[in-house]
Length: 116
Length: 86
Image 1 (tube, rainbow over the protein chains, first blue to last red):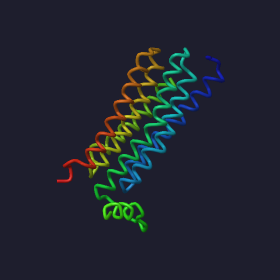
Image 2 (image 1 turned 90 degrees about the vertical axis):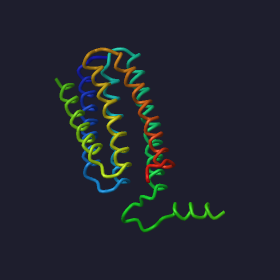
Image 3 (image 1 turned 90 degrees about the horizontal axis):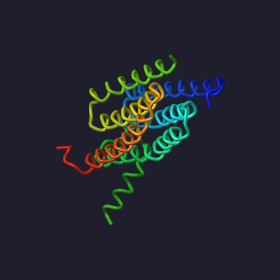
Image 4 (image 1 turned 60 degrees about the horizontal axis):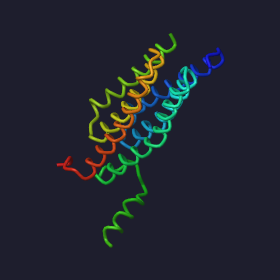
């Protein structure tokens, strides 16, 4: 699998993934809040990592290496939302609230559970 | 050549995230930046395995991704229940 068309598709996917990674890093620096930084650091970065890993899996020589790269991609797809959810839950329970929030259903649920 | 440029872009993204890790005003900002940095560096390891034509880097990337996930979970749990707010 080393034809020129495959190489072109692979490099295009990897360039797109680098663009998403750079956008995610800039978003982490520029956004004002912890929750918006989590948003930038999870969605864009999962997309960028998947694009880079698919491009690398197209380009590497053997099927064993491609299987390993796809295993890493599946691992990211499963674990990155779990880690982000854990961080957001820890932030809320620690007392950090999102600044312009008008509705707080999670806080109401927590209070009701504490009263019972 | 293109692989070198891709590696350069990934390292620029990693250094921008590392700035947030050093500066970040609160603890969860640093945790978010650490997670971002770990994923970008795992991608860098995969690109390095393509560049050097060596599949040992893929095993290192797999173990690094697993350890980074466990690290983020432990940091979030400690931040939620620990003594960090005193």
